[in-house]
Amino acid sequence: DIRVNWVQVVDSTFHARFSAKSRVYLFRMVDRRAPLTVDKGKIWRVSLPHDVDAMHRAAQMLCGTHDFTTFRDGKCQAKSPIKTLGRFDVRRVACIYGTEIHATLEARSFLHRQVRSMMGSLSEVGKGTWSEEDLERALMAADGAVEIAVEPRVGNGRIDVAQIEPLAGEVFRKAVCLRMTEHALHLRPELIR
Image (cartoon, rainbow, N blue to C red; front, side, top):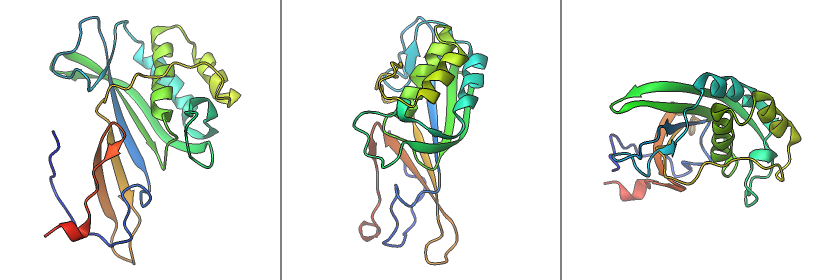
C-alpha cells in the first residue's frame, strides 16, 4: 500500500533523484526458520541465526569514502565506483512476531545493487561463514570479480529519504519517496490541482 501524507508543489527544476542531498535506506531481514506470512516478499528471510553485533562491527568498515567496485553490479551506469557511506547501523529490533534485523544506510548516492551486495556480505558475517576481515578484504580488493553474496530481490521495505537543496534561495525541502523495488513515484506539479 502507498499512502501520501503530504504533497507540496515544487519548482520545475526539482528532480526526486538528482536533487537529493542524501538517501537513507532501511533494510529489513528476519533470521528464523519459519517462513514469513504477513511480510512475505517484503523482508529478506534467512533461516540461520545471525550475530547482529558482528554485522554492525563489520558494517562500520564500509563507512567512509571507498571504491565500492566489489559491491557494484556489472550493469551499473555510475561514472565512478567511489562513494561515501555516512552511516551503516545494524541492530535487532522487537516486532509483533519476535525480532527483525534492521540495517540503516545513509549516503549521497549508491551504486546499482550496492545495498543488496553489502547486505548479502554482512549476512555471511552474521552467519559466521565470513569474518570481518573477509569483508574488509573484499572491500579493499575493489574488484567486481570477487565472489560475494547478494541479497535476493524480495521487495524488502526500503525507504528512500531525500533532503533537497534549496531551490532558488527557498527554504530546504524534504521529499520522501517510497521505493517499490527499483521504481519511484514522482509527483509532477502540473498534475496537482
